[in-house]
Image (tube, rainbow, N blue to C red; front, side):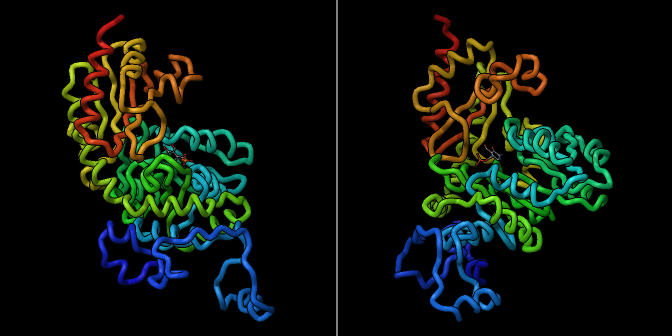
Length: 400
Ligand SMILES: Cc1ncc(COP(=O)(O)O)c(C=O)c1O
């Protein structure tokens, strides 16, 4: 893990230096990409030292890679975790973690505001293997308490959530979980360890899609799970069988992204708040959801638990589906696309993208209205983002 010296450094310094020995392989400054699928033994004595556990080393690509190990140590340091695993995607981290924790006959609880694919995995796939799943409304702590059974293994939730940026009261979550003796898992992707550190609240395991802020350039997929050595050990074991390892070059790009990660998140916290305030005051906007806006229902808990609101700003435009389409079509700098936490500002229209296969009634039941947008504020000048939005609102208002 990180050295004592690393611990004394600030987050920006640790994002660059933590978890890597000062003495570098072949004197390289940047972390090498160890492009190999296998590792060789010098002789029989070398094998014996390894199998007896006297000499930790690498053996085969699916069991780990030196570039990956440095990324794991660095992310563990940033999150304040004892141990960490890096995966080929955020979903690989979530599914491997969940599978390692459950067996037939178990029950799990998940909040309804979680990532669509996580919910799908828990609702549909786990049921096939006899693992029951209760979905509770986010923020209904009494329903959460009631949902826990004798065979409940864990409670899973995102915080903040997507797209409404709802924030879980982690103290309350921990209290409920402890009363029943169940584990707690938080997908903290939207917050990042710069803005929120759930392990400090006693949460057992934290996951992130590193595809987002940590890599930060919309060019790779990666994921991570963090927690105690004891809880990570069985996940590591299953990870070796599932084989969802991150490729070494991808891992290098993740390490490169991590070097600017804290600075980028600080910038995005400030820029997103500025954009959220602009949207809140705009006559074409009905409602804005951003946890650091006073109008957000979880503003108080967000200010208590989080250092910044992150880059995601959700808003509802006035008008209808046609106006929403005209608005999207009028953007000139902001790209239309999923994901968040990268350099480019992106906007998604859940009604026509993620929920295109739902009926309007089904969508509205989930709060996915025709004019709902999720904006992921990037690293451009905030005034340019605002100007692009302003001009698109104006064009959307003019029917051709
Ligand atoms: C909150 C959250 N968790 C997990 C994931 C899955 O991550 P990945 O796309 O890296 O598999 C996503 C993807 O959008 C996400 O938004």
